[in-house]
Length: 270
Image (cartoon, rainbow, N blue to C red; front, side, top):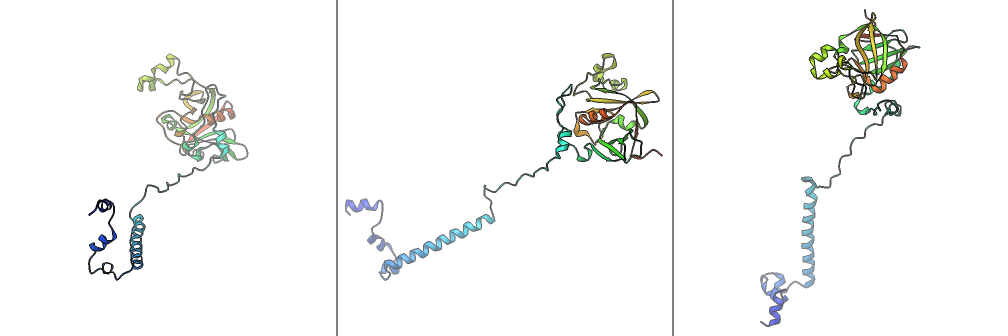
């Protein structure tokens, strides 16, 4: 074999060598099949091979997934009523700037609103419904302004009729002696130490309305709280809490003295 043939053998096979390598009985080797027939036969084999591969590709998605699946769209939150966004806005004008309420954390039924009066009390009366976590300020014309409230342990312990005898902006908080006895860490805010100064962290919040009965302080309060997510719930301590924006609104509507009724429902005591 010449050097040229050895060189060709490294990269390709001459047609004559290929013909010799075929089976003698093969029609191609015997010379009975033309080059045209070979091309047709080869084309048919190609088509069959490609068709098989395509079928496999079509079957694949039925038993596997790819990494390009479209992500599920996140649910769209319904837009809040602009009037409520304004009602529970931030209040930078206050002595201690109050942040806006995240309304997604408050049940809509506890938003402040004017409703038909369910209490039957005379206009100007405050009614606290401890069963349903509502406070009503009865208005003329059979209407009432309704607020959502949270109730602490003290809020459930007292019921009856009294008078809002005193109210205060940004009040101090003085824990009762029995509370200090249970929680010694509160001693720094005792009456002897002047109470806890006003501010956003003060348990009485932005405003407090003080309930008296027969001329004596009941130690029962309507007050604000920055913990708006506790509205409509029973909490471990405190009296009747409203969102700071709501206690400010109530404070502005209530004169002293104002009658107040606290009961487990909207209707009068039997």
